[in-house]
Every structure is written in C-alpha cells, then in structure tokens.
Image (cartoon, rainbow, N blue to C red; front, side):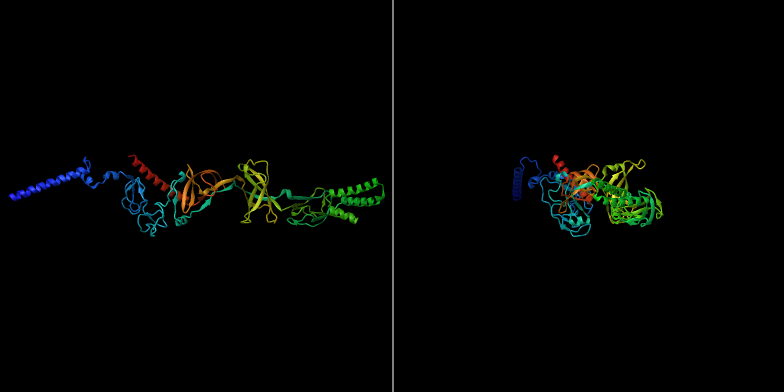
Length: 485
C-alpha cells in the first residue's frame, strides 16, 4: 500500500509540472490570450481575412475566361463555379492553353478543344489573347488579338485611310440627237431649174465640196457673161490712163463678188476666168461633211426659187445628248461639267460627254431642266435617237481624309471604326465624320492618314473588344468595391 501511494504522488507531481510548462508556453505566444489556441500554436491568420479578398464574381476552375456575377455552373464543362479571388498584388499569369482555330477557348492545362476537337497549344502572352498595354488605348476601347487562321476564316478585309476627292454623283437618262451647231441646209440664192442630181437618198454620207446637183439659172449665165466681158475690157485698157484702167478692174471685181454672193466657189470662178466660156449649168456642192438627213423629193427637173431647201446635211462626228435634271441637282451641274455616258448597245464601254448649255426654263410639270451634252462620235457608231445613261460626278470636296462607308459602325450615338494594328491586333476607335459621297465618308477626328481600318467582320471584332472591356471593368469595380470595405 505504501508503494502504491508513493507512485500516485509521483504521477500527480509530474502532471502539475506538465500543466505549468504548457501555461508558460501559452503566455509566451499570446500574453493577452486574445487568439484561440489552434491559431496561437499554428501562427496562421484568421480565415475571415482571407475571404475578405473574395470579389462578387464567380469563375470556372477549368475555364477561367468564364466569369459570372452569381454562383452557378460553367456553360462549357458544367462544373460548379467558384469565387474569383482578386489579389491586390499582381500575380504571375498562369500558363494558358488555347485552340489554334478558336482563340476564345482558354484552359489551364493541356487537352482538346471542346468545339473542334483539336489539341490545345500554349498561348503566348497573357490570358484573353491581348498583349500587355493593349487595353484602353487612348480611351477608345479594348485592343484584341485574333489568331491569323481565325482572321482568314472571318474574311477580315482592310482599307487604308487616305485622302481623295469626294464626288457628288448625279444619275439620269437621255437620248441622242443631232448637234444643232453641225447641221447645214443647202438652199440656192437664185432661181433656176435643177438638172442632174448626184445624191439621191437619205442617210448617204457626203464630204465637203462633193457635188449635190446641177442647176441652170439665167441670172447665173448673165453674170458669168458680165465677168468674161469685164475681164476682156480690162485687158484692153492696160495702156489707157490710170483712171480708166481702175474703172475696168472695178467692173471685174463687181462681177466676181456677185458670183461669190450666190455661193459660187472660188475654184469655179477661177475656172470660168481661165476658160473664158459661159457655163450653161453650174454644179452645187456640199458646204460640209456629214450625212444627208433630208432631201427634197423629185428634185431632178424641178424649178426652184431663192431659199428653197433642197438638202439637210448633219455632221455626225459629234452628237448632242438631251437629258433632264431635277432642280435640286442643278447646283452640281454647270456648263463644262463632264459626264460618263453608257449605252446598252455597247456593253462595257464608256463615252465622255460635256455639258454645252442648260435651258433657261424649268418644266412646271416635272420640275426638271433640259441639259444638252456634247458627245464625240468620231467613229460614227452612235446614232440619233439612242437611249443613254448619264452619270455626272462633280467634285464636292477636295483632298478629304476618308474611309470606306462600310468601315463605320453607327450606333446612333457615336460612330466607331475598327483599326488594324498589325500582327492580328485590332482596336475600335470613335471618329467624327463629315461629308459622305460615293461610298466614302470624310473623317474629321479620330484617325490619321495611312492607318488601316476593317471593312468586313468589324461587328464581330467590336463585339469581342466590348466584351473584354466589360470584363475588365467588372473586375476593376469588384476590386475597387472591396477596397472600400
């Protein structure tokens, strides 16, 4: 019994000794006793401080590009979303694996593309495909980076921002007619009888000086005789006094003048003087080259009077084109304005026309004005009466900085273009636009000459940029809101 009592006393003393040792250790770790024992022994921070860094955003552990504001499941792999942690200190970007064809796919480990089944490859640069410093350039938007294969599949086309003259096109129609300034009428200035006729049908081409018909006129015969007599008298007066000689020469000049007034050519007068014989009939020639448009029927043997119109000849080397222009288009058309003329009879060919004059009065019924254009027709292919399409393209603005109208995204509140930065990078920019003509629009602010803008698939690029910009703002707002607490 005494032995057992001694053993119990020793064990009790050892227990008190161990308890005192533990109490001393606890006082050294936490003198005030404010933390629980497990925290004092482990030296870890409270769990609520770590969760204080949690933002109000949820993401997928397998697909970090999936971000939502509420808990749920990933739309790709259907895993439960986890809270997104936003650290105040920047962390090294994890290795991201993406699909070469579908650049929006981002995985944290190797695998296959859930869309096309291709093997994922490591992505160069930070997640999201954009290079560092490409977000929010000049406050216009978020720059994005697209794989070259995706760019080709999207059929992305670009155009240069360059200077050009903006044209105001006016399109109308008209018909060809004879040039009034190139039409002549053959009419005698004396009476007589028509003998032989050399041109017998309408549409026959003639040249200047070509014989048309012969005519016998007593007045012509008399004047011819007077000329021959005056010439003989002047020769006999060569040795007479000077006053008599001048009088004889004046008679010769008077007879020549009378024949010339009757449209007798100088060659015919010279032939009459050389021969010294009176011509019974005189040949009437064409005063211009062209085509016979009108001929008096039954002309041969007919008695004609001064002023009788025997032939109408039109020069077809140039035609007039008569078009109608609305009164609100007259500000762009004036004398000398060029135009492009096309005919269905000559597909693929363009003729040039020039405005010769504008009629002084508008049509009250149609509110249009007749405009006459001169159209060259040296090869003679054009015919009066042909129907033509006419396009006027006067310059409305010279040397304007322009982009194609297709490149502009119009939201109603602002105008945006997508600028190609090179190496697969694209950036939306807001622009201020001016005059728009002929498929191009003037850029007043936002772009510089030599930049490239996207003219196709820019809606997809702008949507991708807006999505990335929205995600960046959500993350920033979440981080800022936590910082306020």
